[in-house]
Image (cartoon, rainbow, N blue to C red; front, side, top):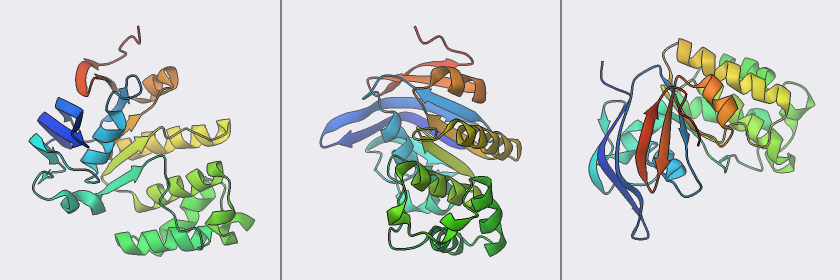
Length: 220
């Protein structure tokens, strides 16, 4: 089976700046990979490019068997991207947002309730408009939608940000369970100790390129 992600000399220009400057990376299916590095290293751009949200401008880039240089939209239904913005509809309630996302992804409606419950959204918050939620609550909604959709590839940018200790544990459990079922998870995090315990492999980026990769890379 082909790798979930295969990049060779991958370049991504943002306003002519090489946010990715020749990335070589293979991520196997079912892996949990932690991206880390300083601010501006290219972590967020790498996640967004693999999700088809920004273009690779040079090199080779294959995601879930699709050449995303040729067609960025081909992979979007198979991918769940959690970025700093949650991409929710403020005027819809929590359950309406989740139900809409499930229908758009072709997911059975009965997956929505358990996913919301897992993130503590099965009580009165179900009927609250997302625009009235705190940043942490909005993130919980986005995570619940990701779990309900259960895409083949999870791309997560600081998935623990803004969450309490209990919800952070729920995120870790959801990631581990998804990977055990064959889902591939690639996430960026500055919380190196926590992320290192969750991931099977770490990838260090700096200057828009992969510098080191392996299990338990030292942050020094």
